[in-house]
Image 1 (tube, rainbow, N blue to C red):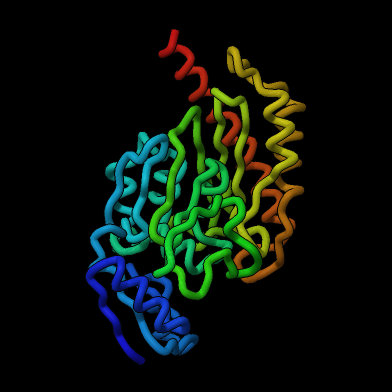
Image 2 (cartoon, rainbow, N blue to C red; image 1 turned 45 degrees about the vertical axis):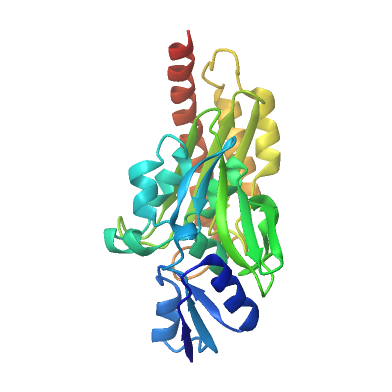
Amino acid sequence: MDFLSPSTLEEALQARGAHPGGVPIAGGTDVMVELNFDRRRPEALIDLSRVPELAEYGPDGGYTRLGAAVPYTAIVEHLAGRAPALTRAARAVASPQIRNRGTVGGNLASASPAGDAHPPLLATGAVVEVASAAGRRRVPAREFYTSLRTTALREDELVTAVLLPEPKGPQQFAKIGTRNAMVISVAAFSLALDAERRTVGTGLGSVAPTPVRAERAEEFLAAEFDWEGAAAPREAVVRRFGELVAAAASPIDDQRGSAAYRRHALAVMARRALAWSVTDYRKGAARCA
């Protein structure tokens, strides 16, 4: 197995094109586990940790540009105001050691349906930037996941950045697992309200072959939410929102939880996220007043 260590993005893209069977590695929190357990033996490892552009983040037009190799710890420490839901998810990732190494780019490339970054990216309408030696393109996160552990990423491409829209309202993230720390989620849920466009975004994790949205729940809540004053929704609305979120899932029974439990957990998290969002929305309206 070859080990390639490019120091520029151009070199990294050339290496990726020359080794389509190679595996890019940044934090290594997923890849090294697979290597240690002999689940994968790629022809090459392409180390991206020395590529400066992938470790940069900051404003980019109406977005926050997050380099693919920015660790979760940096998101927690520096991007809470620009990416509230993703920051909440970053805080929930494993241990401090893993957060110091793990990246959103790695989550996207591995495309595990249990990845904590996926629900916030879906809910907020993030855009994934990918590149090859032939050029760059942008793929909405809502079109990025195609099937189990399969994405729109081509074999000669790398994830280079994620473009996070400026928040226009409350954003939430919640997950549930078999213990309080170092846990792979049994189910995860993210909610984002856009007060300007009066739209709702959702993201669900660990409850389908890919991360998914609850589009019927989004449409329902957008029509029922009090965008003017954020009055507490009627109990029937809250309950129906939870039901529609749970109905969007297609979970399985496994060692971490049953399908029935996952649907129940989703409904509970959706109701709680809505309650938290109403509180945050009121605070925002009060500040504006």
